[in-house]
Image 1: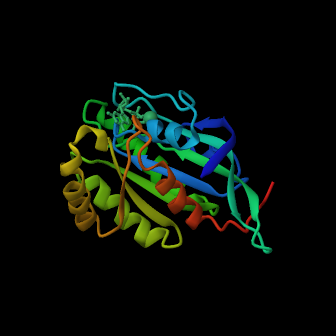
Image 2: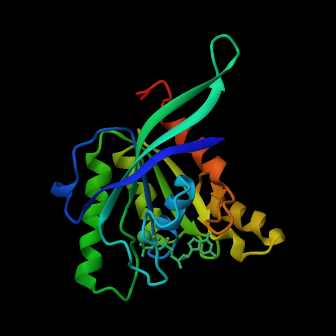
Amino acid sequence: MIKVIAAEHEAAASKLDQVPAPRAPEIAFAGRSNVGKSSLLNMVLSRKGLARTSNTPGRTRQIHLFGATVEREKKGADGEPAKERLDLVLVDLPGYGYAKVSKSESASWRPLIEGFLRARPVLRALVVLVDIRRGVEEEERDLLEFMAKVRPDVRVLIVATKVDKLSLSARKPAIRKLGEAAGLRVLGVSAETGLGREEVWGAVLGAVALDGPIV
Ligand SMILES: Nc1nc2c(ncn2[C@@H]2O[C@H](COP(=O)(O)OP(=O)(O)OP(=O)(O)O)[C@@H](O)[C@H]2O)c(=O)[nH]1
Ligand SMILES: [Mg+2]
């Protein structure tokens, strides 16, 4: 069980040079507008309303950095349970692929997102969100290709969002189909019900060496 000891909004940047210098391992969340990035961030951090969410696609137009201290139990050297704390930065990236935003504005996001992903040596994992009802499209394929080429050192995780929108029996096949299209393992989540929270943390913390900075 992952406990979030502290979480706070640290910075918002509309340009790369406004992003603060790296201070802790980073986990970034990317995906189409309205896919549920900010909601998932709040869900994993157990903080409703920390990242602003909205029904209106295109809500998050800047890069937002959230500092978090998490704690998990693990077995100590003597076999007794021990607590381990880790400082992390979670990054809410602007959504892409929203047609109603002006061309010039949406075009300006790609260099910002790609520039960020390229520039952060502390980036350990990228969570790519895909709506379970929608599947992998051109933008996701481009992003996965970009990461494989430019940041092969970063773990990429696909998360299928809004699984609560599908019936129980429809979820597994949809997730399997998504995994086949992406060629990667897919975790199903629901920010509404909290489904998948531990699995996302498991994958994220697996990418961040836990023998890293202990606070
Ligand atoms: N049913 C359901 N709705 C969700 C879920 N996650 C997000 N939503 C809803 O989807 C809408 C968009 O969520 P956001 O988290 O703001 O999406 P975003 O990806 O951050 O969007 P942008 O900031 O515009 O890129 C909101 O109305 C959320 O309440 C989910 O797991 N289930
Ligand atoms: Mg958002």
